[in-house]
Image 1 (cartoon, rainbow, N blue to C red):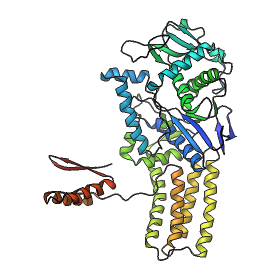
Image 2 (cartoon, rainbow, N blue to C red):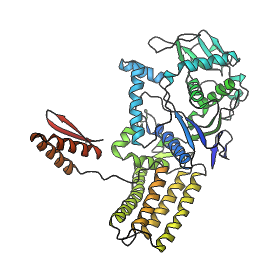
Image 3 (cartoon, rainbow, N blue to C red):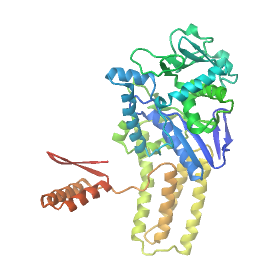
Image 4 (tube, rainbow, N blue to C red):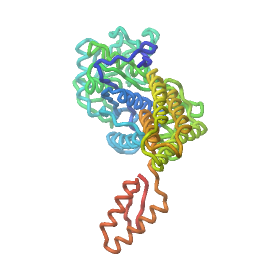
Length: 468
């Protein structure tokens, strides 16, 4: 299996630190609003990477944090007159709902920065003790030039760099020994959340959060560190400097970064009015379509989002789900159970499609080519399975398409959705049962509807229902 390593700028054979295991850290979102579709790309991409490793038999320890200590969260809290913790808790819950809708598997651990402050303070102290950091008036800075390999991920030269970027800067830059030094700890301002530390009441810098959480939940060395390409510099560069200066060993074996997502060929921004949340997209499309759209391009390529491309993705996904539905119908109506010898020969040919799928995924997780392999399998199924097919043959094709889809996080076996009229009829029956004091039947109907994704709510105005 080969993957592109941002550090070396080439594809490399994946060799885990520990045989059969993968330790993977993915930088998660800053939780001050609903996640936007740019946030969703790394979530979908690296969830798919994880799924493929698991399909190949690896035990994956997948850690993805929530940044719940940040200037943007504090700003939102001040605007709403609530605490930063309330904002973070609210949007973590909303983010998890969106991730579930996108069929993203829960991480092994979702550490919250605010709950890991003690570890960050300890790591900062270790850096001070080793001469890699220093304190000035309550602020602690990382001594960038003390780490000789600084710039090795972003391939930037220290002397060409200007301080800035997204690191947490403070006033009084003349306090720094070097303009390139970045903040590890900053004193609090009025109205901000803070924690006690040996240097001041304050909070950590953004970069140290991930270094400490990765070390705590995965150890001093990990296999894969991943995120959007906007994080390469300064965030991931600074993580490397902190972690390797502190731990004295290589931080991550492989660095994976997904490309940018544009909207109608323009960078997504609130000022352009083209900012789209996952929740908004979910009101117009099944989010399985959105996931399929995201995987239809190579993860390192820039991706353009548009209504036309989403419609194309919807139609393409329907071609696959229609084939799956047809095979399910053939399984239910088949006149024979077991495969004929001719069918067994046809079934053996499907190994070619699986091989094509795996070859695509093992060439730097080329999901676009993996989807092509699924389409070829669908075409094969459509031309070789019909009303004369055995149940076993139809099921073999059905199971294979669904299994390959599942590796990509695509739910291809659709559960039949109840019609509104059928729901209303059952609600009427339940109402009659309750009037007749047949509460057992009333409860049975409620449970039956819930199993089919219909939730009932009894109100003064009558029974209300919604799909969940």
